[in-house]
Image (cartoon, rainbow over all chains, first blue to last red; front, side, top):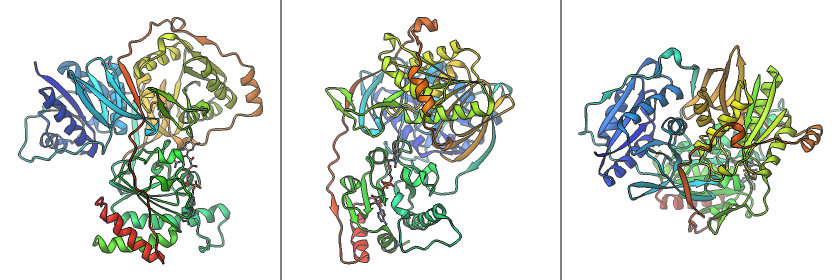
Length: 347
Length: 256
Ligand SMILES: Cc1cc2nc3c(=O)[nH]c(=O)nc-3n(C[C@H](O)[C@H](O)[C@H](O)COP(=O)(O)OP(=O)(O)OC[C@H]3O[C@@H](n4cnc5c(N)ncnc54)[C@H](O)[C@@H]3O)c2cc1C
């Protein structure tokens, strides 16, 4: 009997998240090592494109559940489906991308299947048919090697930690439809409403991030409108600064991030906080503007490939991690930096 | 409303954590309530203020974990229990979830179990969902606001693509994120009460369960490889010149 690797393809409104394909690439690599086959599972409604893409990114067999009760992600019916396929197919390994949904489903499936889960893995090796993973702990201050002694070994893979596989349009297959497990009425949760974030690059998928900190509000030459109180004036100044951050980000197709100080001061929403209690990111380029580099912030971005810091204070700890640093005022540096890069990149 | 908060004790977020002889060391940094769990306590206490009832804070660990539970009492929780058993020494997340679920069942008639989104030591981020699954309760994860609406809990939650409003029928498990609101500081009275409190300790036998299986092992703890970074300060005579030099240097790294 051949070894099976089951991979859960995380999708939203019919579009797969990039980390899903990276995880599918890992599935294929593990399958070839264990001479096994890759079974992909897609759950949702109107997911044809994701199903055919799953073949084209390397799946050997795609299972899908397409139903109105699965349109909105809800963990209970999704977990029930994953557990059902896993009990029937008996995969050695089940992989998920580390998305909010992937992590949750991995944990819950581990309970249903009475096995273990290894979330947010950044490296792996195969030893005697078992997967030995490396995962960051303490927000990346340490790494652990870990294994799960029981099958299926349930693992979630961090986005951007693994290469996206080749898309081969010549591949296809006959997907197998799976019936829902939970009747619509038995599902104890209901999605009442949904609002999509403003368009823009998502922080965890971004190849480039431009972040602002408390320093972004610090421009004595800006005079806030008279009718604002002190706190409002500070936020107004910060918004001017974040506009400069945003303009640079736009030229670089980058996501905007922030330090906790900037979030706590009310300059920007919490969704974009980078750090130990925000998002952990690992872009190719991270530009920190007016961020001191507290240990909790560094924990969230230290594995970025190239870090650039712009800060007034030559002793700011962020400079220790920075490939390039500018000791100076972000209000003076950002506009010409944005202009120059716009020209160089022909934007 | 009968509310339970599941918390963990972790090293302070500012701790310089290193691996020494295969063990985690955080120097003389204090052990504290996991920062995320403070938000869970805050959410629980806010819910109690609106709906009445009790807030019970529980944790698994050794005697010293009572300090974290006392922080919960000082913030205003009504009761605290510690689950302590030598069998939980190297428990994996599944074992932890099964034990927390057993404790929640022992407390009886619990309507909501609150959790922080993850613990800042192991960064697993699965305990809330796993405990909910063991209990057979719906999970409302990553909640940024929580409210009660006749027999259900309504949360707003953050996902990659935006915000979602979801309702779950009681009893439910809820994990919270920072937007829930700043955790309150312990009051003077709260601290006095917490210092005087005796926190009951439950063993697995008290919960009426055997030690659950642990299938995950982590034989090796390592410091991350040192990134060889050459720090270079870019300078020039004017902001324009600095910006031009910096732009070219960034481009030369071939990351754009
Ligand atoms: C439990 C806990 C969890 C935490 N989690 C996080 C987290 O997830 N993420 C996070 O970021 N922080 C986190 N923190 C907070 C962290 O300790 C710092 O307080 C925070 O990162 C500081 O943000 P900052 O660098 O923007 O502000 P500051 O430390 O105030 O730094 C501002 C910097 O801007 C510079 N500056 C000022 N004006 C200018 C200018 N005009 N041009 C250029 N530079 C200028 C200053 O020199 C200074 O270095 C956490 C703290 C705790 C206790």
